[in-house]
Image (cartoon, rainbow, N blue to C red; front, side, top):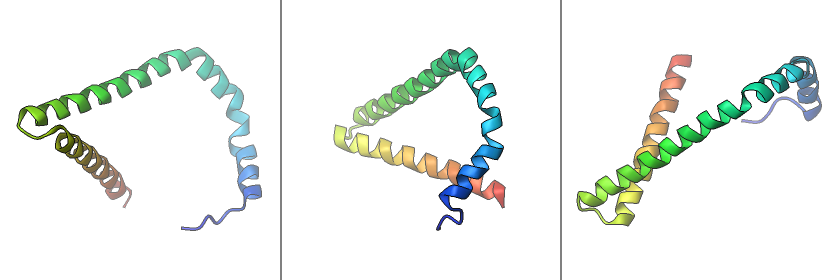
Length: 92
């Protein structure tokens, strides 16, 4: 799908709709940024731990490590697709 807006139009839209809120966004990020960063780090850590648990599970079930990794990647991709499709279905 081709973008229907020129860079100049996009810049003008940002000036109108985003620029007025930049001081507020800076204030929020200065006050809550460290806590939000910790939350984001913990979510990422949880994802890594869950991935490693999945790989160890498949290896324990008899798959070699390469196949366990591929199956885990495939499962994660399938989950991401399912979540995306749920979101797309709600928009209709």
